[in-house]
Image (cartoon, rainbow, N blue to C red; front, side):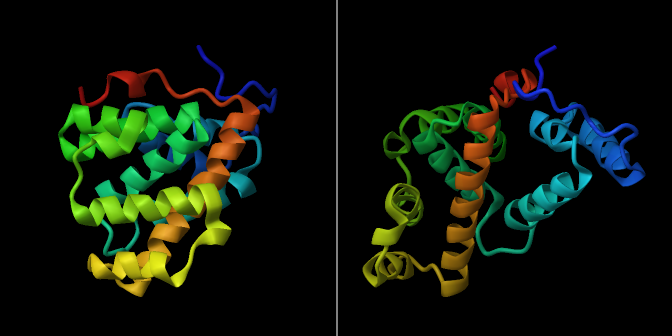
Length: 187
């Protein structure tokens, strides 16, 4: 079995009851416990902080669809060349869109995916925020507003970008490996 990371950080033993229940829910709903969660299991406080932020950004209330948020995750992860997140979130794009080709295009070159103007504006912003966030200007935010994004939507886009820039760096720096199950999902 592939270890979640190349680091030797054993899971808390025993896992706190709430963490064990969360892992059981993942196993039931996803058919696996994502390695990113297993990697954080050495420190339940860090795991809880990570999952709270992830769940809020990716599953919480937002005018951005779950697919749009996953598309942002894939674009950021592709720019950062984060193997774990490209595989995991590429699978999520395939599943949410029902389009395996879209998931592949998003991982390899999102600009070849044939996206609409709204999605293109959103991902152009995500790309710039990943590569050169200090260069974002009001004109970049105005380009989003011109496609119907509200200031709250811009906040959500920026927050998803920021979260994945952080998690990409942790995953890559620790040698985190994606679960094998992701490779076959939604194909």
